[in-house]
Length: 173
Ligand SMILES: CC(C)(COP(=O)(O)OP(=O)(O)OC[C@H]1O[C@@H](n2cnc3c(N)ncnc32)[C@H](O)[C@@H]1OP(=O)(O)O)[C@@H](O)C(=O)NCCC(=O)NCCS
Image 1 (tube, rainbow, N blue to C red):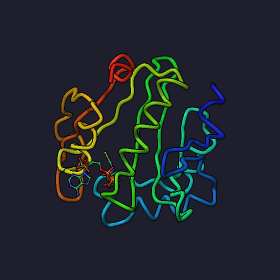
Image 2 (image 1 turned 180 degrees about the horizontal axis):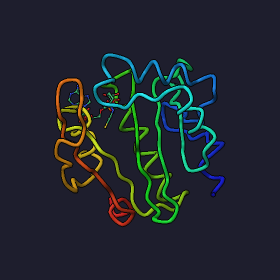
Image 3 (image 1 turned 60 degrees about the vertical axis):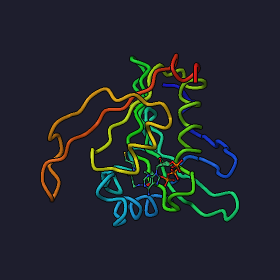
């Protein structure tokens, strides 16, 4: 598979987005299990994340704030080569409300279309994710539909919205 999904170091105005190393896995697991994130992102095991680092179709990325050099979030993305379809599996930001998700998502969508050659970028989002939904809509993702009661959480069944954006829509943006 394409080498382009590994050894990444992408820059935005305030961040650097780069490949996670095994030494970043504890940070990623802490973020997944953080009380403000855990209802909205899946929690992987150490072995899951090691596998994602080694799998050429995955990008496990940490987001580093340039000013402080602190890690402030992460992405997990999966590319389906055959269908040119990039899934944003997980995103979490710990310095919330400062525009970091929008800034880094823009970069990763742009990278997916222009550098990887994706035709579609998509993700799913629980219907009670009141931060995520307006964020994706503001980036011109389209709602494709709802997977009804598709996930059984501790508090009951949850619905998932499927959001996508196509290359032609992004370049028109
Ligand atoms: C969702 C998440 C990634 C957003 O990250 P963020 O850096 O805080 O988001 P941004 O600051 O870039 O905000 C972009 C937009 O998101 C929405 N948003 C962000 N915080 C919000 C809040 N507290 N309430 C409502 N909308 C909010 C707004 O539309 C905002 O745009 P605006 O500032 O122009 O109003 C972050 O809140 C997070 O880690 N949440 C937990 C994990 C998660 O839900 N991941 C996504 C799973 S689908």
